Each structure stands twice: as structure tokens, then as C-alpha cells.
Amino acid sequence: MHPKIIPVVMCEGAGIGLWPVSRNTMPKQFIPLFGRDSAFQRMAKLLSDATAFDRLIVVASAEHRFTAADQLQAIGVKAEIVVEPVCRGSAAAVAIAAELGLARDDAALVGVFAADHVVQDGRLFVETCSKAATVAAQGGIVTIGIPPAYPATAYGYIRPGSETAAGAHQVEAFVEACDAVQAARYLADGYLWNSGNLIFNAATMRAELEAFEADVMASVGEAVATGSHDLGFLTLEPRAFAKAPKASITAVMEATEKASVIAGPFGWSDVGCWSAVWELSEKGANGNVVEGRGYVFDGANNLLRSEDALLAVVGVDDIAVIATRDSILVVPKAKAGKVADVVALLMANGEPEACSHREIHRPWGKYLSIDLDRRHQVKRITVKPGGVLSLQKHHHRAEHWVVVRGTAEVTRDDETIIVHENESIYLPIGCVHRMANPGRIPLDIIEVQVGSYLGEDDIIRIEDIYKRC
Image 1 (tube, one colour):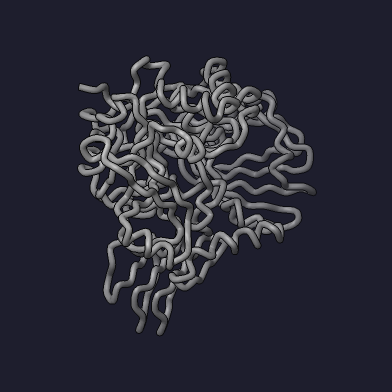
Image 2 (spheres, one colour):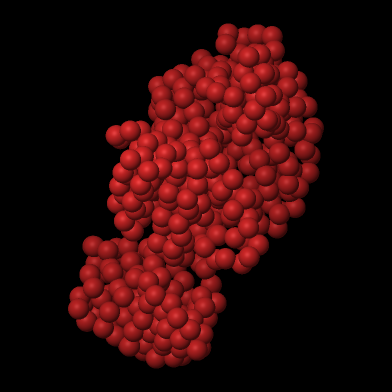
């Protein structure tokens, strides 16, 4: 009987193929695309199966650590959250998982899973992971391959070789994404999609990383050993981690003699573009999928998704129309893979919508920019119960706060003032101020900023419970 798998979920990537919904400020793994739960929450629930898995570990960036914590709390899943100071590639990510696993148990079995992938059959997923763990317990490194549903050009492939154990085969080759003709050949020859999911003996993986990516393993080992615990997170030591070269775990998997593959027929997608969202969604009349306020007249197999605006399409088939508060995307589903190229163009032209949403999440809650001009900005601010903004001041703007729900405890210089619903307070330029929500319901405030400069870098933080000073 092998030990339970220590599951490690990697919350990396910006998911630019699902722009404008997915951006750097809130990437696709944290966005509900199918039902109420995000892909991250769906994966966390799967990995909470106590028959196969030990306590969950989540690796997230500093920017998204509080989002991960909030989403785990919302579904009642407990996890150790590890903060990755910078992204150094999949080899470093796997090295983190191996080190964290060995910190728990010298004989640890570790599973590495992406936060933004979707699994359709959870029972088969758990069964496949358990089979892989049986092989990994013998000192192996097992990758999970997916039986292809069609000749995909966006996925990498694995060529399985001779059988090494029940259901497991030697890996003969890893193949990168290819054209349609080659993909059809791979399908006919029995290749598997490379899901990127790995289950391995942690000591074996550490030894292979030391053999083939020694600098990565050394830097990660130091960063984990000298990491610090604060606010409920383990933060890897930044300077040590930054020394790790950027590298892919595929290089290790190609070099090692301990790699094997197990087929996972559980239905899988990395949801890399809007056509994949349409394929995985429940269809309405004529194959149309509508999320939010949308109508299709004389059209079939379309995807409409709107955060706010009313959408209507007439006489078109097979397109995706995606509307957020500040951007609209219209693309034929057959060309949905080109969205990443569009985002690159927007970034090159300095368009802020390429990377940032109008609604920004913070440890204390979130804010939405409603109106912005040269000398004023209007925001809707929501503070969670118990949430506290930093003690701060501004050199170039004054602020007016109007409470529309809940109760605000406001610090203004030497005063502490309770501001109730339908009351307001004025904060002149230069005053030291802070807002907190002492109540049990969310606090909603309309903030009006007026001044000569309204940038976020005019926030001079003096004190912050979230350690952002």
C-alpha cells in the first residue's frame, strides 16, 4: 500500500487565450467559466478526495495569494499556500513540489496539477491518479496522457512505448504542438495528449532535477529552506528563488530513464480558448451558449458572454462574442486561437485593458473604476467584513467617501469616525487616513477622487496589516 499523494496545484499563467475575461489581474483559473466554481476551485475539490490525496498545497504568486485563499475558504477546502516570488518555469515549479513533499515525508508521493485545467469525470480522475501513484511508489515519475478526442494542434503529444506496469507505458518521446496533418498522424499512431499532470516519488524527482537541472534544484532548495511564514502563507526566499534559471520540466522528462505514462480517459481540457469554453458548456437552442444578457436570432453554435451589456447577434453562426465592462471581443470560433496574438498587439500599443481589469481585487476586498477623467475618478469600493485598508495619504488628490451599504470605521489624522449608510466623509489632500469594515456584512462605498494626479502610485502607505508597505 503506497502513501497518499500530496497534491500540489500550480496557479500560474495569465490565460490570455480567454481575453478579455482573463487578464493578469484576474487570470482564468480564478474565474467561474462553468457554473459557480472557478477551475481552481473545481480542481481543489477533486484533490480533496481523502481516499487518494493528502492535504492540498497551492503555489500562487504574491498578487493572487489572497484570491486563492478566499476561493478555498468559499468551498471549505484547507490548504497550505506557498508564495512563488516570480515565475521561473515548470522545472522550478516541480522542484518546489518535490521539496515540499519531502518536507512532509521522505517517501512522499507528489502530484503536480494545473489550476486552470478542467476534468469532466472526477471519479475516473482519482482512479487514474491512484494507478499512477502505484507506479510512482516504485521510484518512478508518471505523466498522465489523455486519449485524444480530435487531432488538436494546440497540445503537445506523448508517444507511449512498451508496457512497464499495469496500465503504464515507457515514454518514448514528447512532441510539441504541431500542424493538423501531423496531429492526425499522431492520433492514428496512438499518441496521447500531454496534460502536464505529473505524479512522482519526490526523492526520485529531486535526484533527476539535480542530475539534469542542477541550478534549478539548488536555487529552489535554498528558497524553500529559507522561506518565511507570514499571514498564513509560506513565502519562498525571493533572492534565492530568482537565481533559478527558467527551464521546462519537459527537458528533465526527456532525459530521465524513469518516466512512464498512464492514459487518463477522464475528459480533460486546458480551456485555452473560447472555442473550448463553447465545447464544454451546456448548449441551448440551436447549439448556442449564452452567459449573461444575450440573445441569438437566426444563428447557431455561437458563444455569447456578457458581464453587463446586452448582447444581440443576428444571422451569424459559430462565433464568440465576449463583452466585459471595458472590452468587447468578436471572433469566429475556428480562429479563437488567434486571441493571444490580439493581446500581444494590444500590449505593444500600450492598451491597459490588455492586462488589467477595471475591477481590481485586493486582500481587503475589491474596487471598480466607474468613471475616470483628467481630474477626477469615481470608484465603487467593497470591503470584506473585518477588512482593513492601509493607513495612507496622497500628495495630489482629495477623496470623498459615501457609504451606500454597511458601516465604515474611518481614521482621519487623529480622529476615528464611524460613518453609517447614507453618510459621507471628506478626506483632504495630505491627510493620513484609513478605512475598515467593523461589521458583519460587506461595506460598499462610492469614492470620488479629485486632484491633479490620480495614479495608484500616489498611495503613500504608512502601515498595512497585509505587509504591502
